Image 1 (cartoon, one colour):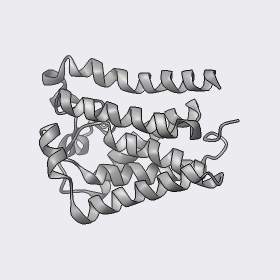
Image 2: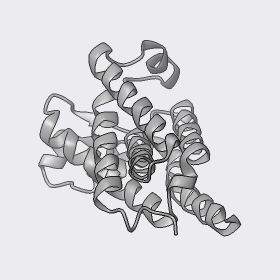
Image 3: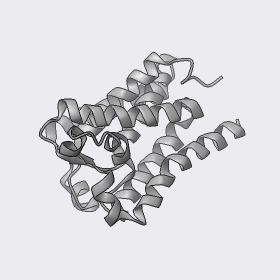
Length: 192
């Protein structure tokens, strides 16, 4: 069991490390790495993934890292290191493609929050499939959060805290991708 937590911690650190490194070069990296719809349509496809590791500033990064730590602390026992990595990478791609295909009016995005929603969705779906009360409760909480954001819009307080817009569609696409991963890849997302 100790090894599982250490492996999850290692994967979590591997997911967070690029964001911390990029923050050192934030000004130079912003224009090159954020999701930028016209640039993606012009062939800069790396932005579909790289956008998740660039942030509006240190506070935005800190909020995202706290969210990642919270999801891993609460739901980590429902994940394997492989499922965490798959959820993060497929979640990042799912968010990028979701924004490109279903949010044509959105021109930019940056941050880990969509990927975090994917990890939350994967853990919740896996837990629910296994009959875990934690899985069902966290799935209900995730769906409630996404629904509230879609109906009421982003939190003005959070937008003020992070210094920019909260892109709620990223949370929707991340959560949907994560739940799909949790449902469709049960062997890779179940602890043995």
